[in-house]
Image (tube, rainbow, N blue to C red; front, side, top):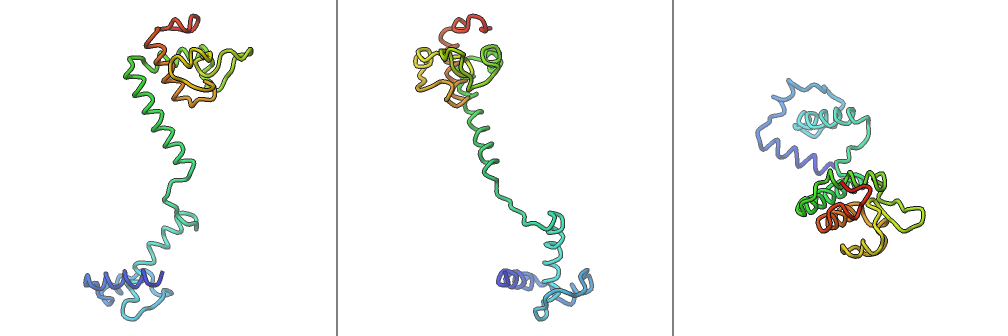
Length: 166
């Protein structure tokens, strides 16, 4: 820390900030570590940092994204990419949302009472596989379920969803 301050002092000194000129406008007026003629320069550096420290409640400011924020950002990027692929298939998100709301209430992990229909669009395993899905549709990420439903809709229209198709 001391090395950083000394480096900063050297830069300010090189810029021609004389300590005597700054002393007249020094709001601190003492209580700050003195380093030769550059005491006032150090005072000018420390006060804004103290003010910032007070603003954040005495804690340390962490400017990095939290893991949760990073996860949400990644999810938003995935959702945007998925939506772009869906739109490219000529299916609107509104159409898919209407089908999903009717089929599952929009819940991507729901399974029918007899276990035959799974996920947001209530795929059976055969239909899921026919549009390139693998494994359990209800365990697939929501964006993948949206994409597979859009593929199915682009191939067959609303007929796979006889009650909820729009």
